[in-house]
Length: 167
Image 1 (tube, one colour):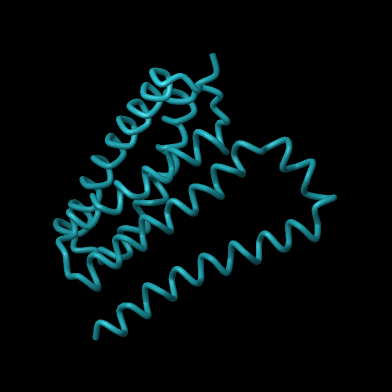
Image 2: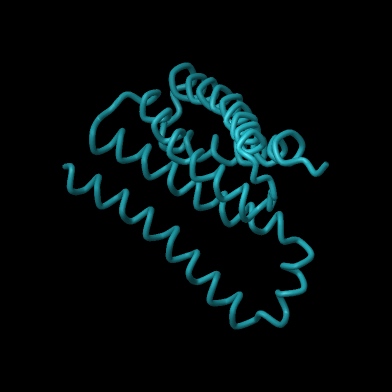
């Protein structure tokens, strides 16, 4: 049983990685066409790329916790959140919003703002998972994916407008 569940998790990770590698190959081969588009929409494209990787981390940790270790849905969600948000902060700061803040106080302020915004979206996700799974009896695996789509939009807006806003 655990072997089948582990295989399911690995297949999801493999699918996301394969799609990512295929996309990179296509982008490289057609770079003369895409490069001007990338330069124009760099922030949004990088957010999608790193947001996708953040989602893979979130889902992989959640699935491993719930399917392999049979942990509680809420605890699994919180552990997935901690690991994926830490990854998201670093990649959003460096690659997406290209924050130039280097001073400890400024980085700490960005970090606190980022984690506070993500705590808000975590609360939203916990409520959505509770309503969807506990009250409406939707499958938690499907509900988790649906929540991730909504949370991605909420997180982008909060990061752009609140955390990494240009001064």
